[in-house]
Length: 350
Image (cartoon, rainbow, N blue to C red; front, side):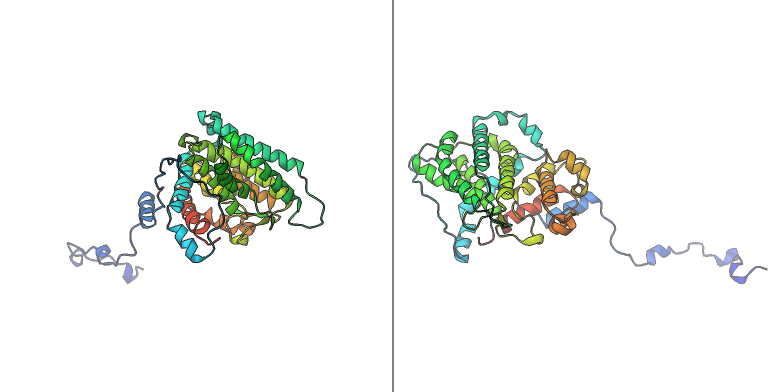
């Protein structure tokens, strides 16, 4: 028996031009955009900070050198700094260093002519001598988990060596040595608090910036500064932190990017911007970390963080790094880290 609802309609009951019901249905949301269009829209809505121009080194024949001292003591002082040419110069220098290593590996720079520059070799020699001082200043047994007082002995010997180191680098004027050396002295941590953090890391970059302003580190050395000199300093400071159990200076706890460093993430993200295979989520792959950390600063810092934390897993000990790994690409991470450098590293009252 055929049910009535299944009986065919006579031809006379079928309209000759049936309406298109799809035209009468409401549109269910906007059409999906292509990934390229979506990325373009996002970058337009949230553009990365541009790299300011880096002025040529100044004429210094009539320059008066002044030993640096802390001048930023209040919010008003800090606002004056943020609006100053010095602030713009620091941002320009750091961003130019970052730009100089885009799509480059550490191995690329090791094999490049920049690695043979006398200035680069002299800087590496200075850091090697600092490493030797560390070996001569072993920690003392105090029973304390943090803050070994032998760190102060290390800093004293570094301070004594700084004038000779600067002469090796080409700084001959005594007043210039006094000014520039202050930044290098502050790059190794604070002896009173026995701590170290991104502010001390920044002092090392300011030391390099001073040498650039003295025409001792021209732009051709920038890839080597970011991928040879800075990693050498970074590994030295890891040894210093481990030897003397330095407290993090100004740590944000697990919700900070890292207890001690910032710039390896920025320079490292620039290295990976156009990488064909390593994605942000690759930081969770132990094989990629093991194979590629020696060539990429971001991965090297992830490996170090994983090694030094007692809790296993970025999700638990470094949730901010874990969150960042969900980004679509390295360009987005690099843009975010540029903003973080300006707003968090330079933008907060020390």
